[in-house]
Length: 385
Image 1 (cartoon, rainbow, N blue to C red):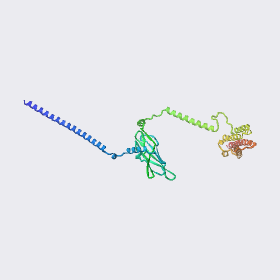
Image 2 (spheres, rainbow, N blue to C red):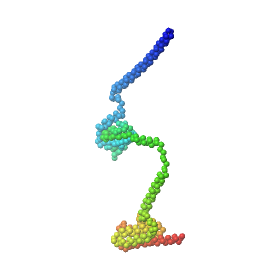
Image 3 (cartoon, rainbow, N blue to C red):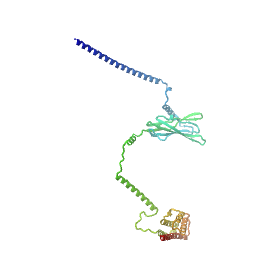
Image 4 (cartoon, helix red, strand yellow):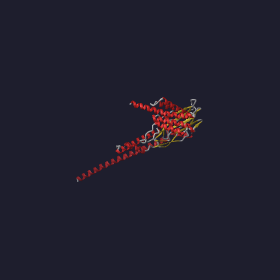
């Protein structure tokens, strides 16, 4: 009986303790909910008070940001003329499309100033609608009286907003007779700002981050480039040889076994052929003297390498004077022939009939005299050995 009552008392005590703990936990939760609700109400009341205070703020007390000033200026600029008397204003962009962060130049030109006071837009006034004015410089032109005739304001602008952005220009202030006059450009300018291509950026990053290993050249690759180099060198050499032979009037390919004709014998044969053509008898006097001098000049080139065909008479005589087979008699014959031919070709001289035969004789005697002197000099060299 005692044990039963004792168990009953212990059970009642445990139930009482458990009930007390639950009540405390419930009170704690209720207090937290109450506090959270109170904080939420306080926050709503503060927001409502701030909204009421903003609505109660008068328009004059609102802060005037750059955007508002720019909008007011742009609205005024639309209604302003671009001319006042002789003074005009215009605006243009060096580039009407850029990528984000790039720069271009806005040029504001005021002409016909005539010494009047001009007030140009500031950087702050030009910064609007996503367009940022970074720096400005002015180029001034003076008239004959030293007065300012025109001004060009060069403004460096950029943008970090993509799209088609209107470029507005603030009004230009003119001081005319104590009055302040405003004019604005009528040009409608738009700057297109584009994003940087993402594909290019990704490609650059990929190439920069890639672990690229250059493979060594194979034998066939080296051989191929060597063949290319040899072929190119052969082509260059062939072109040089062809040009040289054409300049010297030589055949491109010298046939083997062909015995070269001595220069003096070839010249004498050409002179005889020319004599038989009877050019001067047919009235072709200029052609006659041109052919005689050409034969003599070719003889000098074949005999001594003198490019007489590209020289004047004075240069040819000077070059001939420096050869080993020179003699006073041969130089005299050459001088008389070339001077007579110059008179016919350039001074339109009309020589007598005997002078034509005399010119042929000068040429023939000159070739023979030079060839004779050459043989004598060679014989002396052989004896000296």
